[in-house]
Image (cartoon, rainbow, N blue to C red; front, side, top):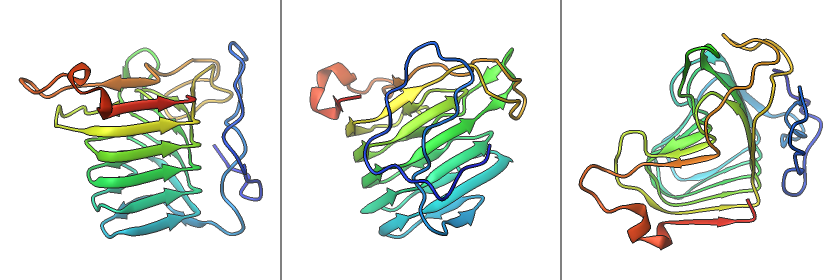
Amino acid sequence: MPCDAGARLAGGPPARPAGEAGRNPGPCRLSGRPKKVDRLQITKPGVYDNYLVDSHWAGGNRVKITSGNVTLRHCEICNSTGNGVGVFADDVVIEDCKIHHCLKSTFQSQEDAHGITGHPRRLRIANCEICYVSGDCVQFDPDRKPWGDVVIENCTFWTGPLPADAAGFRKGQRPGENAFDSKSPPGGPALDDHPAQLVFLRL
């Protein structure tokens, strides 16, 4: 699913009216000449800005963050059969990003391909749009490892009928599970016992 790299959304993502068929994701957050890769592995602190991660339907965590003190900004992650972003570190910010078309298997037997997942500590997700995923827009943590202190603000998570065939899915099929899903480690503290672990602001 191509992106118009010349367009950039300055603020938060646009509101999405319910029930509208065949919508494309909102304006692209890339600018100028984005750095084009099929996978981005972040192993050092820093700001990672203006990447187009077009995975050409490969699997795994297409952006994998294993270093703390990282900001992922103004990026688009798309066209994968795996997760858009996997966060396995502390003190990470994901802002002004668009994640879409993470689609695994088929509509009849959907398998998880999440927008953002992992087991982070002190993660902020802001001004992002996530859509057309066959798992959850955000899920922590599929491996049932400890996570917490997550803030999600001014984001749009949505799905709808696909505007075109994509991976094993067909035009008009509506992929996806939940906007947000949380898991706790076996025998570990429940999320409800620690209300500071997760905060939603203007979702």
